[in-house]
Length: 108
Length: 112
Image (cartoon, rainbow over all chains, first blue to last red; front, side, top):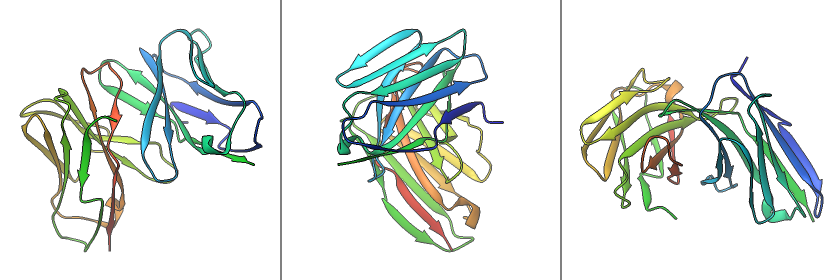
């Protein structure tokens, strides 16, 4: 069993829909990261959080440390949000353990 | 965007040949990382560096070596490439170990 599990693996939605991607982990962590990988391959850091909730534009990330679970929400989704979203947990100072990613497709 | 470049961006090589991938940063960040990304796996850490000449192994370090002689450059070497090392390789940097990591554009390596 992977230490970091994401669901769903693939998600297709219509423009404007509210999107939720989930991340569950089974290890102790010091922080959790959400990353975005565009079709061209580049990886961009979206959020780093260790508690509560963060918001940036239409993106919201939440984490529940007790339940070892995080969610990434996208409001008013747009085709340009189509990408692979990756959850990663930080163990100690150096090690990041990555989930396999969720492929999101937003149709016009 | 963080100033990170990787070279080459694409490479095809034959089994048994040595290969060196270069990561170059202009941010003066202390930490640099090499990851590989394969279908069915998340990104996996190969090696990382926490300063000039200071490196350590990650979870998939077998068959790889690294060197960092300058703050800005981190080299990944496959001494004798194998088909199992066909992958996309990403370099990342961070100001300190527990900070956000910024990723390079990736290098697609094919070993035939």
